[in-house]
Image 1: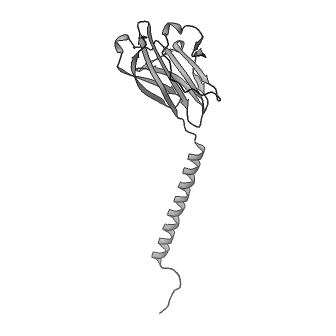
Image 2 (image 1 turned 90 degrees about the vertical axis):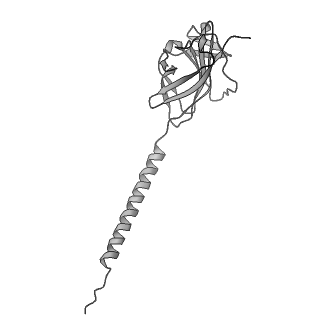
Image 3 (image 1 turned 45 degrees about the vertical axis):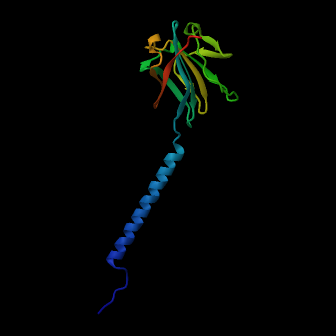
Length: 181
């Protein structure tokens, strides 16, 4: 009887399978790691959102923070699903050394009528086109007379949406009275 030295076919097959699975796992881990590290995500936070209305009209106000790792381009705003014209949008870029802790203030929509408006000692500029926002940047935004908001909408919930190249971000607010007591 002749004895052959070497591994049996079963053991050889098992070794090849384990090596193939380990190699596939290493390649998958590497590809996932490269993708996650090199892909910067886009993320916006909407805060301090309000919609005020009185006999003279309505105003929406909110703060946008770019919390993602990439610069973004704001394509449009919409209120209750209706796109806002740039002529009715005013924004203020919060400086990197500036901190805004207070809430947005109700503003009369009739006062938002020139290319530059001063609200709470801040100079807001009227938007004319898409608005770039750097990573870590913040904007305060006012929209004069957002479409579909009337005095009889007091107390109802409406949506405010911000659209970028890659996503849309939505928040909902209750319509508040802008009439002083």
